[in-house]
Length: 427
Ligand code: LRH
Ligand code: MN
Image (cartoon, rainbow, N blue to C red):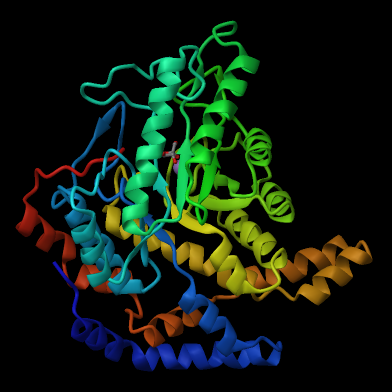
C-alpha cells in the first residue's frame, strides 16, 4: 500500500480555503509579535521524528493483546508502513530498528527500499533483555552487569553485532537500554553491577565507529522491581561522562518516577552537552508508552521550551539530538497513534519557538513569576495547527494526515493485502 502524490494533492485542494484563512490570520498575529513566520515554517518542515520499528503492530500487556489486522509481517512491510506515515506528514523520515526483532537480512536491499520511501535509519537498538533461540547464556540475571564474565561478553558481542547492522544501513548511533537490576534487597551487589556495566560499555564504546554515538537509556523499574543498574539520568550521565564525548544520555519520557521534573533534567543534560536523544511517549503512572502529549501536553511543551532556549541555532537542535518515538499501541491503530504522536511533538516544538525569550528573561531577572507564566502560556495556548498544516502543504504532505489516512481506508487496505493474522515483531 503506497500513498501517491495525487491523493495528497486532491486532499489538500479540499483544504485550501479553510486553511488559507486560518493560516493568514495566525501569520498576521505572529508577524505583529515579531515572529519570523517563514523561518518557523522552515524549521518545522525540516524537523524529523524517527519511528520505532517495534511499534508498528498492536502492543499488549501481560493481561492481553488485541491484534489490529494488516500488521507488517517483516522488515520490508515495516519500512512500507513508515513510508505511509512519512508520505502523509513528511515529518517521519527515519526508522529506528531493534535487533534481533528487525535484522536486515539483505542490508543493501533494505537500504534501497528505505530510500524509495525517502527514509533513513536512526539509532539502532540492542536487546539483551530477552533470551534468543539457541542463545548460550541467559540474561535472566542481567547482561552487561552479570556476575559471570561469559554472559557479559555475550552481551558485549551482541551490541557490537548491532553496530555492524547499523553501519550497513547508515545509522550513526547505538541505543543501549538494560533491563539489568534486581527484584529483592540483597540480591545484587550494586557497586559490582555498576562497575561491570561500565567495563562492558567501555568495550562497546571502543568498537564504535568514529562518527557514531552511544545513547544510554535509563529506567527506574520494570522488568526489575527493586533496583535497575541504570535507574536514572544521573547514573546514565555518570557512565556517559566516564565513557567519553560520544556517549550521551537518552531520555525516554516514560522512564521517570511520578512528578519527576523532566524538563529540568533536559535543561541540565543540554547544558552539559550530554543530551543524546529522546524516546517520546506519554504516561500517567508507569512506563505506559501512551500517545505523546495525551496525558501531560504542558510537560511536553516545557521540555521543548528548555530545548529551544538551550540551543542557539535550531538547526543544531535538529542535528545533535536523536528524535525518536517509543510507544506501544494497546487499543489504537498503530499508524494513527504514531501520526498523533508526531503531530503532538511538532506542536510542542512550534509553541516553544513562539515563547518571547526576551520578555521571559526580563520576568526571571526581575523575579516576576506571574509575568514568566503569562509569557510561557501565551505561547503554549497559541493554536499552531495552521502553521504545521502550512509546513506540511509546502512539504507536499497532507494538510490533515490522520483525516486522509482514514479517508483512504489505509488499515482496511493493509488487512486486504496482509490478512488479519499477521503479527509484527516487537513489544
Ligand atoms: C524499555 C524501552 C527501550 C526499548 C524498549 C522497547 O522500556 O523503552 O527503549 O528497548 O522499550
Ligand atoms: Mn525507550
